[in-house]
Length: 124
Image (cartoon, rainbow, N blue to C red; front, side):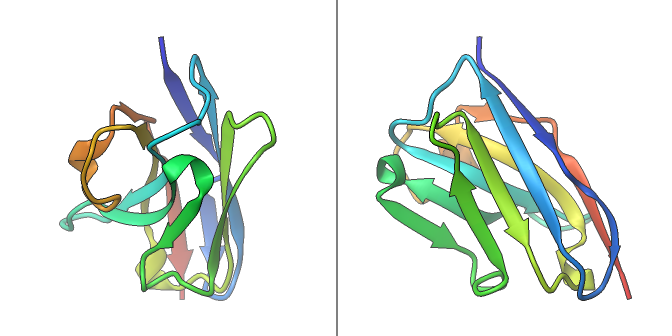
C-alpha cells in the first residue's frame, strides 16, 4: 500500500524560506511524475513543481520559477521542495502527488497517489 507523508509546512514572514518533504512508503519513484501541488482557499489545485519521465524532466509553475527547487533523494522515496523568497501568494495547502497516468503534469487527474497535505502560511 502506497502512502505519501508531507512535512515541513509552517508560518513564515514574506521573504522567508521553508523546505517541504514528502516521504513515500510502498513506492519508489521510477517513472511518471512525482512532486507538489498546492491549493489555496477558493482556488483550484495548482501544479507547483514536478519531476517527470523518471526524473529526466523537471517542471515548475511560472509563479515559482527561480524561487522554488524540487529535489529527490538517492533512494527515490523522498521528494523535497525548497521554497525561497516566499510571498503571501504562496499561502496554501501543499500536497505531494505521484502517478503514472498520461496527461499534463499540471492535471491532478493523472496522479494515483496523494498525501494529506502540509499547510504553508506566509504573512506580510
